[in-house]
Structure formats: C-alpha cells, structure tokens
Amino acid sequence: MRKEAILYEKVGKALNCKICERRCIISEGKNGFCEMRENNEGKIYTLNYAAASSLAVDPIEKKPLFHFYPGSTVFSIGSVGCNFRCRHCQNWGISQSQLEQIPTREILPEEAIRLTKENRCRSIAWTYNEPTMWFEYSLDSAKIAKKEDIKTIYVTNGYMTEESFDQIKPYLDAANIDLKGMSDKFYKDLCEARLQPVLDNIIRFHDAKIHIEITNLMIPGYNDSEADVNALVKFIVDEVGVEVPLHFTRFFPQYRLTNLPPTEVRLLKKAQTIAKEAGIKYVYIGNAPSLGGENTYCPACGELIIERNGFKVISDEKKIKECPTCKSKIDIVTD
Image 1 (cartoon, rainbow, N blue to C red):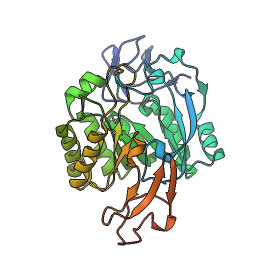
Image 2: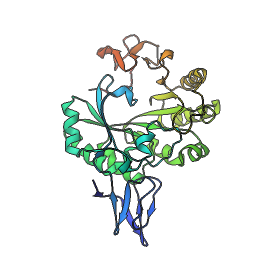
Image 3: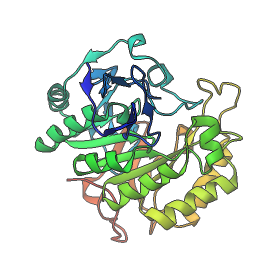
C-alpha cells in the first residue's frame, strides 16, 4: 500500500528523506537506500505501508526484553526492508529483499491493534525488519495502541533521525536497541552504516524515559575482543546508567558470514564478567541456554528473582519489584 511519507523536503530537483540517518537524496522516479521510499512526481511515498510480512504472538523475552512486563506476550509484526546491509542478518530474507519478492498481507493499524487485543497481548512490537522502514505505519499504529492501553515496542538498529525520534517518542514505551559494535570500522564493514547515530539515539531513548535494553551480538574476530567489550560497557555506564539491561548474544553463522565459527562460550562469559565488574546490574547471555545466563538476580545480594528456561519464565510476582532477601529495588517495568 502506497502512502505519502512524512519528514522530507525538497532539495533542488530531488527530495531529502529525513526518516533515518542516511538522509537519502532521492531523485525523481528513484528509491531510497531502504528501497521502501520512492520519489514520485515531487512527493516521497512509502511503499510498504501496512504491508506485513510476518505476524506472531511471542514471549516478550524473545525481543529480547527481560525487564519489561516479564512473562507477558507481545504481538510481533514486521514488514520488508532495512537501512542497514548487515552481513550477519538473521532476517535477511525480509530485510534485504524487494517488496515484490516477499508475500505480504495488508494489516491496517486498526487491525494490528485488534489482533493484539484479540490475542491478549500486553504489547505490540515492530520487529523482524527495522521498524523505521515503515515509520508512518508504526507511528499510526502506536497512536491507536496508546488509546487502548497497549504497550508499544521497537526492536531497532537505532539509526533513526532526531526528527523521526521526536515524532515517535510520545507513543513508544520500550525498545531493544542493537549496539552492534563500538567502532565506525565495524559499522562500515559489516553494516554499511555509522556508529555515532546509534549512540546518540540510545541516549535519546534513555533521556526520554523510554525503557531500553541493549543487545550486542558478539561476532568472532569483529567485535569480541576485550577492548570492544570494555568500550561498550564504558558507554553504557557513562551515558545511560548501570540499570539498563545488557544482552551479550552468541553468534551463529548466518547469511554472508557463514565462514565464521560460533562465538566462543568463554568470551561470552568474560564479557558478562567485565560488565558486572563495571557495575552494570543486569547482564545476560543469549543464544547459549546451557550457560544459564538468562536468569535475573538481585544485583545487591544475588537472590534469584526470575528464572528463565528458554522462553518460560518462573517468578514470584511479589518479588519482581523488590528483592525479598535484602529489599533492594529490582529495575523491572510492570503494572
């Protein structure tokens, strides 16, 4: 479904899209880098408005969000397209495809919220592909969700502009942000992007009091050194605070990085140790269930607060907000 986009302006004979930090200058008849925005007779149209490629009822922990309504379900919805070209993308089949290559179903914002309620989900997440690639759709949907007391979530690469962030900010409750690496070289070589806009947006989300959790996929030989981990941890501690949950995730060969081995378990455990010693309260290891790195413990005394087995959550509602042993606050968003 085509719909006129927002956040663009005329630059000479072309149009400047202001949705993401690529800020594409799009000539007449051409598309932006994401392939989802077209300059047609002096207007930018979003080509995938309401075009859903993927729908699912997921555990909130799958996003992953461990400190936002733990144990609840989320209505997950994705489209087509991305503003990154990650060589390790796990959803490359939809994120790196043309719209006409992927079967989609038209799900208007009103229907998306109806499906969320019908499936008794506490929240809706724009996920699977980068949510800003159908920004107008997610914004329209989030406005309706707010009126229905449904929580709203972005699973994002954090590459939106300040202009688009300001538009979605009043309607967004939570986000998991991929902080893929801590150097411009990493972002250039593996994602064809830049680091600084991602760092800027993590700070914006935090300062806007939107619940955030950060995920770092540790890729062998690219971002798994002790120096990489230290730089990431220092940024979190200095800029957004030790209460922000951090997920170190194990890499498995994907897409254009099938030549690499999985992340060594010892490096994941080392990263967790570095983060905890720096003061980060909640540090998790994902994609490695044998390590038991997905449980939530009291950062003060070590009491088990939430036990996770896969996506099954075992917890006592009475102690989610406060440790029963030492009475320390547990930083978890619930009703």
